Length: 119
Image (cartoon, rainbow, N blue to C red; front, top):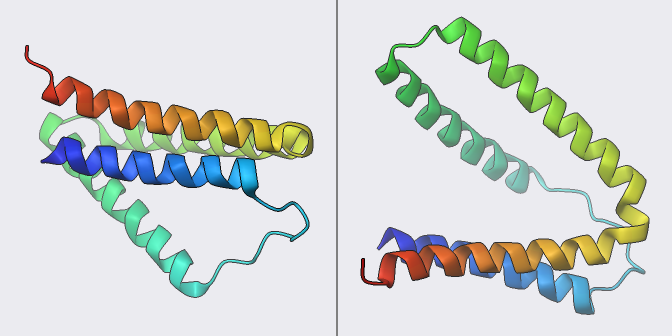
């Protein structure tokens, strides 16, 4: 069942990105995010962090070192992504969105295929 959920989520996001890349309008400026969208993102991130925390507790690792490493990696990747996106976003925005949509749809299809194919 989990492979169907993963496929549906990846496929829906991928198809939405493909649609936006091909038929999306560039005339409208990006909209601000609502409080509800911000809260949904916060809850999703918190659930993910909780799952990682439980896993780390079960592994009995030094949580201080792991937390610092995760924080530094998150900061570096987020900052780098923002800078690169700002630099190439106007030139390659639609192409990057098209490639990302294809990659997400392909990833979902791969997950589904791996679970449904006989071993």
